Image (cartoon, rainbow, N blue to C red; front, side, top):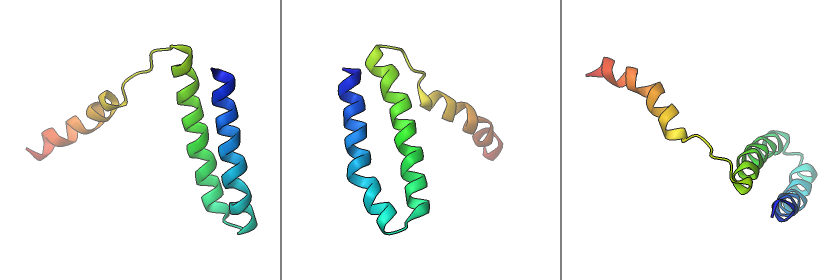
Length: 71
């Protein structure tokens, strides 16, 4: 399953990256690379069955003090 996931990410790179390089869209290529790496870093542990923390709890912990100040 991991091999299929890696093949999928490679296919996405081969489909998207050459056009960005050809058009010299360096910032878009950098953003694409960052998002792709984050997606890959999150999807591989999920395929392996690793429990990932819920990001909404971190967002809540970050914004709860701010919301308390605004009340």
